[in-house]
Image 1 (tube, rainbow, N blue to C red):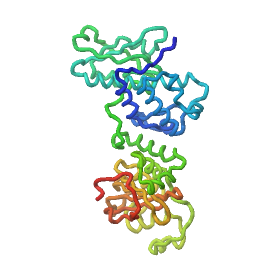
Image 2 (cartoon, protein in one colour):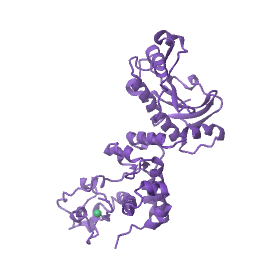
Image 3 (cartoon, helix red, strand yellow):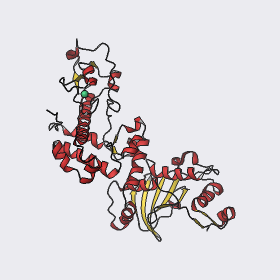
Amino acid sequence: MPWNVEANPTDPEQAIAWFRARLPLPDPAYRALSEEARRRAFFVAGLAQLDLVQEALDALEAALAKGETFEQFKKRLSERVQRAWGGASAHRLRTIFDTNLQSAYGAGRWKAADELRQERPYWGLSVVLDGRTSRICLNLAGVVLPADHPFWDMHIPPLHYRCRTALVTYSAAQAEGRITQRPPEQPPLEGFGRPPGREAWSPQPRDYHPELWRAYLRALGQGMPDADGYLAGLVATRQPKPTDWMLAAGRVAVASFPERVERVKDPEVSKVLGPRAQRIAQKITKHAVLEGQFRPDVTPEEYLEALRLAAMHPEAAIVVQAAPRGASLLVIAPSEAAGEALGPNALPWLVVVYDLKYGTLVTGYQASSLEEVTLWPNHLWLRTNPRLS
Ligand SMILES: [Zn+2]
C-alpha cells in the first residue's frame, strides 16, 4: 500500500510559505552553488530549463493550496515538463512530489515548533515504524532533546526522500524521563535535515544568499528566449510585472560586449588606441586608463565582470528606455559593486548600458549623480533606488 502525502487542510499556509521563500534554479546552476547558498533554492533533478522548474514549483504550490493528490498534480503539468522529467518515470515524479510536499510540511512544523520554544522547550522525532521505515529514521526513533540542542541543526524532517518522520514538541513535564542522553550518531541523507530558516518570501535580493541571488538572475537572463523583445516592449505598454526588473538585471548579468572592431570616436581614446578598436578596449581606455574610474590596469574580464555585478547588486536601479537607435536598459548601482575593479577616481554610481536590439553591452562608466546619466525622455523605471536623487 503506497503511502500518500495528502495536503493537510488545517494549515497549508506555512507549507505554501516554504515554497514562496524559494528561488527556482536549473539543475546545473543549483549543483554549482555552495551548500549554504542552496538552502533557499528550488530545483528538480534533471530539469535544466528555468521555465520548467518554475512550472514545477507553481504546480507543487497549487497542489498544496488546493489539497490535490499526486494524480491531480500530475495532470496540472504540461507535456514539456513531464517529458523533461523522464516521461514515463512515474516513480521519479512521485518522489519529487512527495519529497517537496514533505519538505514544505516539515518546514511548517518546524516554524510552529520554533514559535513555541518557551511553552514547549523539547523536541522529538515521531517516526512511523512499519516495514517501510528507512534505516535512517529507524535509528532516530524516540529521540527527545532540548529544542536548542545542536542535534536539531541537522535533524529537522524530512531526513531523506519520501520521509514520513515528523518533528513533535513537548512541554518540560511531558519530556521528563524521556530525554535522550546521547543522541544517535545517525546523519540524514545528504541535502536533508537542515532547519528551513525563518525567512518568508520576499522579492528583496538582500534576503537571499548573494550566490543564490546571482545564480537566479543569471538563470533568468538565459532562460527566456525573447526577453529583450519583451523588455523593449515595456516602454510602449508601460505595464511591467513586479518581477520584470529581475529579468532585466538577468539579461545584463549574462551580457558581453560585441567583439567586432569599431571606429574610435573619442579623440582622447583614439590617441591611445588608434582609429579602430574593439568596443571594450575603447571603454577601458576611456574610463579606466584616462579617467581612473576603474583600476588603470583592469583586464577586459574584470571590467566585464564589474558591469555584470552591477546588475546583480541588491540595490541596482533599472530603467528601460527608448533611445534614438533602439531600446536599451540602464543599470545604476552603487559602484562598490565593481569591487577590486574600482579605480583611484571612483564615483558613487556605476552605470551600465545594455542594447536591447543587439543583446550586447554598450558601455559601463561611473557617475556622481543621476544628472550625469543620459536618460531619454521616453523611459520607464523598473526598479528605483531611493538614494539615487
Ligand atoms: Zn524517514
